[in-house]
Amino acid sequence: MNWDDIWNAMFGGLPVYGEILALVSNSVWAGAVLGLVGGLVGVFVIQRDMAFAVHGISELSFAGAAAALLIGVDVVTGSIVGSLIAAAVIGWLGARARDRNSIIGVLMPFGLGLGILFLSLYNGRSANRFSLLTGQIVSVQTGQLGWLIAISVIVLAGILLIWRPLRFDSLDPQSAAARGVPTTAISLGFMLLLGLIVAVAVHIIGALLVMALLVTPAAAAMRVATGPLWVPLLAAVFGFVSAVGGILLAIAGTLPVSPYITTISFAIYVVCRVVGARRGRMAVSA
Image 1 (cartoon, rainbow, N blue to C red):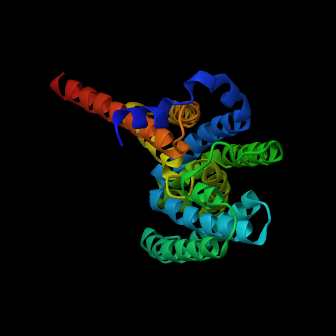
Image 2: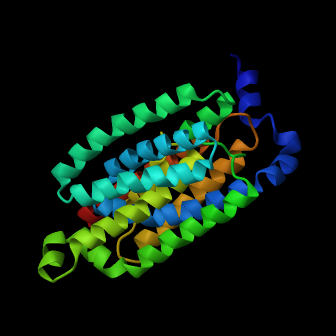
Image 3: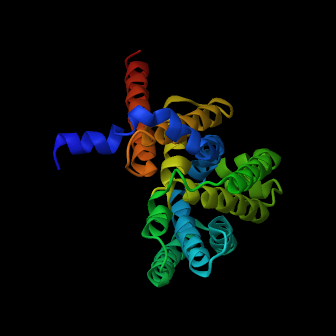
């Protein structure tokens, strides 16, 4: 492959960009909502040391979506069912970090194996199989957009409802339990909300790369900001820029959306890490 082929793959759609954008406007809206809510949820994922859990849930979500594709039902529904099952198991049995990591380590290959089995049995379009792993910008139909936004709103409302006890439990679980915070219920509730947003993310960015929107923006925000307001705000902004920016760039070419989203997300993290390190050196020298 020469440079012309690479350029055409990445930006060959520029002459008809406006027409393509009109066709994928649903995905842009879905990506915007997902980026905002995913970045916000990611703050608690990082604080609770559950980045590994995101990947574990995404594997079961992938299995559920693949099963739905095989039997001919809505893929989003299958993805949600798989995510909620994984989230419930992890949240209920994985109260301690060691138990949680062991459970996730068991669930991940099981979910991935099931997903591959279902996709192997599926005789439909190969693009549908590929999109479950790497995302597909044209996969969000008008009817599905409403469900995706509704799920994101439910997750946002749930996070806001349990914000204070969740933050207390995330930062100091021992003190939270001593103060009477229902830590088990909070943990399970958060895991279910995480499962819902993972299911939405899988539909947009794919099962393999879902952490680019649910972990990286929050990790970047924590490098340059502190406090209960600025970290979630920056994480949501970074998630929005990664999701929408990635989709808008992907429209110009023929490559899947996921490389663009992950590259933007990673670039933001690198910049924030450099800025954070420079601030740290300046603070020490002062």
